[in-house]
Length: 107
Image (cartoon, rainbow, N blue to C red; front, top):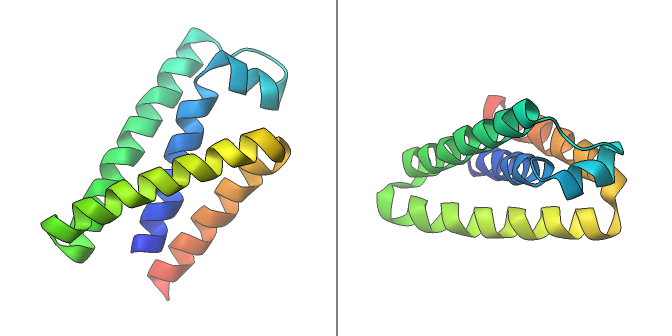
């Protein structure tokens, strides 16, 4: 469960970054529309709420909240490093982490 939560944290932080015109332009060579920005922010908010719920369900309230904050911090750092050094790998990394997280839950 916590691997899936980390994958969702990465995707949520990436969605927050892509909601900003600078980072969206860095990956897609165009600025996002206002509707796309709003959609990415809503997606990120929903994913961040899902992370809290997954960690609390798996580990309890006290430890789950601490692990959730640590995952958010690590995911934000990883997204920042990916956008700084390997910007073209940021999206495939999110897809790979999501698949690994889902497979971890299913198996």
